[in-house]
Image (cartoon, rainbow, N blue to C red; front, top):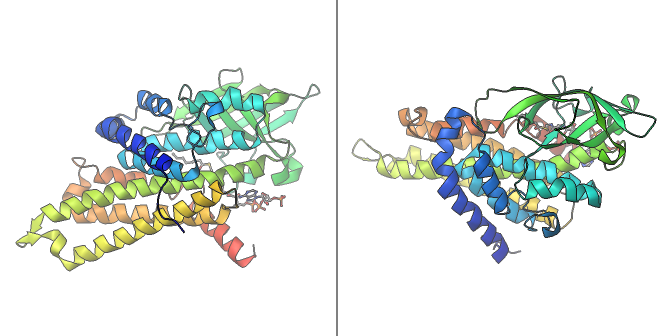
Length: 382
Ligand SMILES: CCCCCCCC(=O)SCCNC(=O)CCNC(=O)[C@H](O)C(C)(C)COP(=O)(O)OP(=O)(O)OC[C@H]1O[C@@H](n2cnc3c(N)ncnc32)[C@H](O)[C@@H]1OP(=O)(O)O
């Protein structure tokens, strides 16, 4: 067992940390207030290999392993969670599925522009009536005589939906077959029949744009099918396994930022004649924060390592995501409590960490879904 990082992993961590500290952290508060999409920063991340960390160089990426992805995500999320949300969708949800299931032409056409940061990608699984219960989707892709598909339906909560050039879409091709009737498609948002709805006003990750999208007689050509027909649900689940490592990493970044700010504060802030960090009640909180942070990172690195080894990592990704997201929420909550009035004020980033942490317990599978995945695996029952 080796707890060290390779030179390559340390290098991408350093690149991410530099951009995070020099460009993202100073602008995070402004983007949070305005809700503006941070396009220039996203392009910069792409130019530095951070939009396709695991994408091989031949498709425009950095060609690194999942552990490197975790390290980079943590750095970006510690500066601003919204940036890391956009990064996670591009890397995990968009590029991953195409790399695993796409044709050579699809990889060149769709992965390269996203990995290089020239375009933004999105992933459309959720619908207004189906979130956790993904197989209940209603978006319909009807096969035509010429092999193309006519797509009609709505998808909701689409991260980067307002700005995405390409989308990995899941639609029902054979509604009678349930999970086995779902097919994945690659959508070009510039084509006829694609429409965007209003951008959602959100509690946190405000600079990550989210909207509903609608398909009205959108024509997907036969070559736009990703993987085999009827295999879309498995593709979605496999992609989400990888995505959950990204969200766990994001949660760790938010938690680390909240923890580090709290450490500084408890050393400086005095009450009753001593730094508040000297009180045992504060020390107990600091110790618990540290334990949850370390446990989250180690569990996330385990899932990433398994992925890098080509082994199954579904349960480990859920364990990591569940642990890290609940830790982030708890740590951010304690950070607000220890900062008291200053934690509640927009003068400091603590309240932003608190708002941003919440989404990690919701998207890419709620905490309840993670528990279900883990418990089904452990018990063999469902
Ligand atoms: C800013 C705010 C944004 C908020 C919204 C963000 C948008 C998102 O987060 S998108 C993603 C959110 N949605 C989810 O994460 C979906 C959650 N649901 C799930 O994970 C699944 O539906 C889950 C776990 C409940 C299982 O569903 P269930 O319907 O019981 O399917 P199940 O019977 O287990 O599996 C169906 C098939 O898929 C396969 N499968 C299941 N899991 C996997 C997997 N991890 N990998 C590969 N295949 C899998 C099964 O083997 C089975 O195959 P077969 O038919 O050959 O036996």
